[in-house]
Image 1: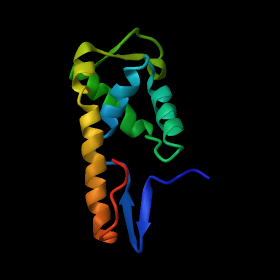
Image 2 (image 1 turned 90 degrees about the vertical axis):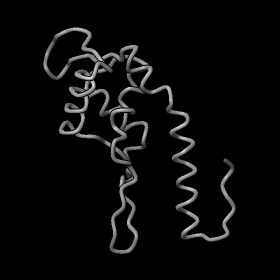
Image 3 (image 1 turned 135 degrees about the vertical axis):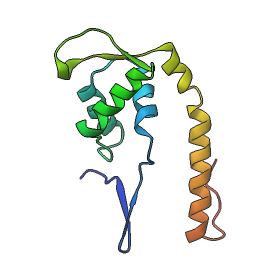
Length: 125
């Protein structure tokens, strides 16, 4: 069974995917190799254990925005759904701080966890 991108806390549904995460994730994946939009959607789903599968309504506007901002480029014009995207030098520069982001995110999650588990030892970070 696939994991959910939502946690349920009583009657509340809490997203595990922070708003704004898609663009840096796209850039990180394109930093490994060029891909078209559908490949990116599949790769995100695969790497997150199906927890997160961005749909076309999120992926293609994000790619268009990244292209307009100069972070990605289309390698060759082809079929609309098969446009291969590659990261640009500006895109590589934009994601250089990803390790700092991940450290900050983990620390923030530890602080939130302390609300529900007062006195709990911090995990090995």
